[in-house]
Length: 98
Image (cartoon, rainbow, N blue to C red; front, side, top):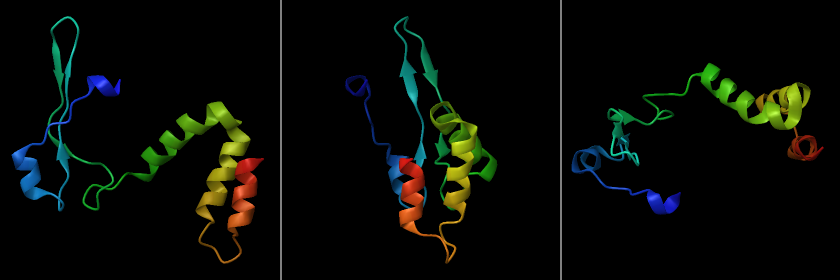
C-alpha cells in the first residue's frame, strides 16, 4: 500500500503550519474515477479536539474484538485512573499483559 501513496506538499497548507495542520486526500480508482475530500484540519489539534465519545467509540472498535467487553472496560477504567496517586505503572502493565 505504501508504494501506492504519494504525499504532496501544498504551499497554502505550509504557510499556516505549524499553527494549523491542513490536508486533503485524492484517491485515484482503477476505473479512472477520483474520490476527493474537502480540505480540513486534523482532529486532535487544540482548536479541533477529539470528542470523548469519538475516542470511546474508536477504543471499543479496536479492543472489543480482541479483549472482549470485560477486559476492554477494565483497561479503559485503569487508563482513566493513571494520574491518580494510587495508580502504578506496574499494575497497569500487569493488566495489559493478562
